[in-house]
Length: 328
Image (cartoon, rainbow, N blue to C red; front, side, top):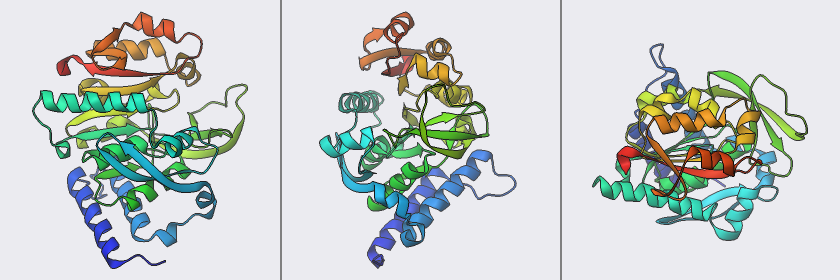
């Protein structure tokens, strides 16, 4: 079915907003790595929305269906997996993913906006690192924030792009690259029972006991490649299956030096060690940069590093909330 002229105009105007907001530079010899990746990602996103038939993927379409997502201040359409994915299952059932955690993250962000008397979301940027099917990124974008989402998994990228095209008027850029310690080519391996949550492995074999149904080569960039293009970052969500410390090593300017007010990061000692990270050093780096830790809510029920390490000695996976001292 051909796209209507009105819808094409809406998509084009939304793309123009993204170009202006993120100040994406042309890909010249003088462009930085981050500028080039942003520009190429925007071009692919634009092409996908303006010419969906040319980018249709029968294999991915078989796995995909549209449902409804709900954020505290916005609702949106979102494409998810029909089956075989935990995140999609809960979004289809409840219209939310990680409801308690999502609401705490939202509360931390909006309370900081009130504290500094800058309550227009268009003034702020939110980073979604490990977007999966895009629930967090789409929710913040639909609520008016500028959003940069990072997601390398091809089927996830396909769904997020479909959702971006469906929800016109949002200021969101999907960067279809993984993040890590250095620029590299690494491999995504997906468990058969959780299609949308692959793990990234660089220069190493799959850990013993890991049964992979799919392996995909992906490009890896450093988060700091994009640091000069990030303005007024108010929050970061990071959920990348144990690769968090690797991203920190390549993203110190963004994660530690920018003093982003609110960060939510998945944390698992076991998963970080599988990816050659050091979970204790990961927490210590954040603490030295001026962050405090909690689980239930920002600024309340503060946890020490010792408490966090004791809570996760048996492979437990938790979401940690970090608030910078300057935001408290």
